[in-house]
Image (cartoon, rainbow, N blue to C red; front, side):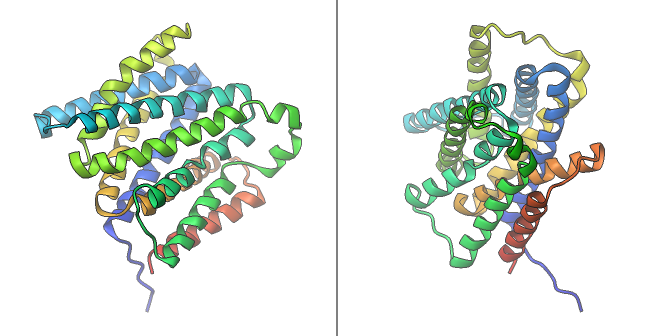
Length: 291
């Protein structure tokens, strides 16, 4: 007789979010190679906003009453998201992926810290072990030790500052999302965040003098990124609607695992020992959560 694995609905939604975001990052890598990261980011966000707006018109129709504090939190969350994204890309432009990626992907540690200290959420001992396994597993799969060995210290330090800032910004943004989802529901906070984010991002990109004409050669992956990003956010918000952020956010550390599996399947990219160890950590953490 087999062993039945049962996961709470919130964790299942969380796994859906990490799957959607992991596939989204895979297509983002494809698109960025064709047309650059700035165009990929901006136009995928525009597509995402179109999906959000269509969903709002068909399913929600009107906005709930929103207090001044909630608007303030929405604005701060949007600014931190934008700050996280642009520091993420700036880190990659200045530094090496093997250094920048693990640092940025450590943002769930920041959210975990704030969820425990500011939001006063708690974990059982078993849950704490599980989320730490997933977090450190996610860090291990996000880089190759062989790439680190080839780096020179002076060059590897470039981009680290932006990676740390990006990780902090993302961690803060996902912390702020928790009370907004609690008070406004799983959809409205991110819909409004996108409405605010697009013009602010457009202004920042134009200020930098970057070209953001629509990249026809990457139209399909950009549309898919926008749809997957929407799916990931909605399922993540549904997850934190039924489980604590302190439990769900760390699961997002496993996003690189999904992206790397796809790269392995489609591009035959070899996995290193540390990445295999990371997979074992992640699976062990998820198995522990199911007990």
